[in-house]
Length: 370
Image (cartoon, rainbow, N blue to C red; front, side, top):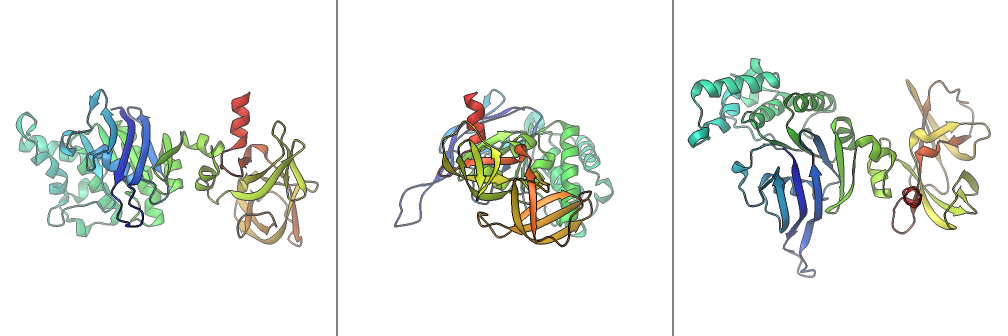
């Protein structure tokens, strides 16, 4: 099922007497989600991603705009008539019901021509339980399950009616790190097996990048960038997007363009033709540093952290916007443990230059000029 959002805006009345203007949670949002894809709404707390999901589900009504499922305008339809499956952050399982009864519950509420026999309901429950691999737990109560198992029950309940759209609102946030990794792989497997269009809300960029066909990065109600996760990571459109994606976070420096070269401090680190002289922000991904005796860029070393296949070199620089620079290099590199200053060549594709005032990427502007 294709989902189309046209100029979606959501306003809430202000409760601040000193600022009576409405609070805009989602601002003129346009988006097309292709049929059968898994997309993530990604952004920090308060960016409007859960509000947007609530409008898609029908739990909230847009102040302006329209929502289409396929060719059908569902903007005014109640949630039960939209053909959706919804999984909440807290799973919302009925504690007094067994797993079987929790999964079957949506089927028991079907009316008219959609009403099913007990045999047909049991068949669908078994199919859903098998899909999420919980058939052995059907007679247990939710309190007898682990967090990951409860989450699978919630997904099975959402899928049992065969929804056209599956909506997941931060479904992994209550799980520990190892279980979160395992469960997100399960969500991806289930989505691929069913082919259901899935919208996944998260603030965790690692989750979004690992399982999505496409990510939508949001900030203060606006859509900032849409694309394949690797494409967005490699070509961020702004400093906000560059800082939000990537672990460890991108290293950001005060820099300048002068005479067609990019400077950090007094060092000309890259050629950067085609732009007037100006102050800029320079972002360098941690993997963008190559140890080199005659490298163009250097910083003062603070420590070296050996992490098996990688080595993390931590350091300081007067132009750095933060506490510690982090350069990640292969453990195959021979690192002089006695050195106090590290010198590097920079990988041009891992260096992003941003307008000092707007935060827009300058390399993208250069490409658009060509």
